[in-house]
Image (tube, rainbow, N blue to C red; front, top):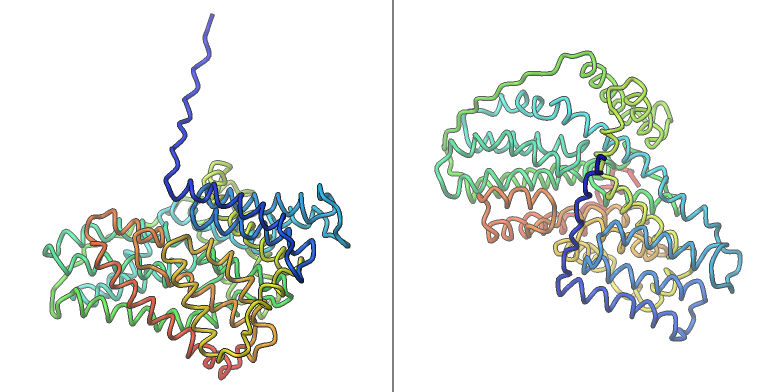
Length: 470
């Protein structure tokens, strides 16, 4: 008699003190918000406040995985705010299907296409080979090589996950680091990768989850933004911050005149599957960039490579399983949270707690950007965007500024937080190399992120207005 193979035991990790705090305070805040009668807040708003407080505490403490909190938000909205709510008393509640539909929101479909293309680029070695080819003109000088590394990393991060980009670029950079003397120069080159990956991610809607969260929140308010429209707003900031970061890192860490020889080879996969992938991925990016001319929504374009790559068997079900589904669910939870805050009237109640009109517009924008930057430094930038973008959009109503600008500003500020190894996955990848001391990461993150935040708060809205982008 053949015995069945034993199943591996699942080991539960003991919670940290911060997680225990979240597990205790989250449900407590949830219960208190439902129990205490809150003036000027209706039943729907009070229930949404309970969900909102629970989400804040669970996301900030990471008491449960971020994506678990996201789907919990959707479930609670179905059970408390929909036409299938377990508790009645709501006037014209949304359908349960509308909350579940956030898991297939057009922004999620856009990201799904982006993730599949990114996975294919890694599968066929396209990302690494492109990096090798594009680095060749920058060989010879260490400072010039760092500029090339940062430009290429930022470019790849616009279309590929910044985590995957950082990992790919470090595979290219490790031999370069070995050719440098130990010390500051190695630190500068190693820091250039995560900084460029973080900054480059702000350039397109598929570059970073906060971008997708902002797009979803804007669409929920009827203020959709095209793929090219996002790039027009974000690219000027991205380029300025990127060149400032190069200037800062090379002046501080890389001596002038330090030579650096690059020996890079590119061997592009020429198999039929790889060639077909190149064509489909290139056509997708071209359609994204020409959206104003053909009028096909970027989310619809994002679904084309999903169908084409699977139908031609260039990508398989195994590739689908490897996609970053937790990130997609996290974005969906943020979209649902934003919709709930708006539909329940919680946004108006929260905004009414402070007389925002007494604050100068510049100070208000600086405050929003600073909160986004500070919170994203210590917790996930996706979680921060989930919490702040809907509130910022509600706050912008009635102010002398386009709400789209405010939503984009908060999302971009979330991606500029890179002062700690825990701030972003690319930072963690860089820290793991052993070439980047925490002190150096903190200094560069504060300098570069702070510079970008000041540009966001005081310059970018004027630039966008002068260029007629908003």
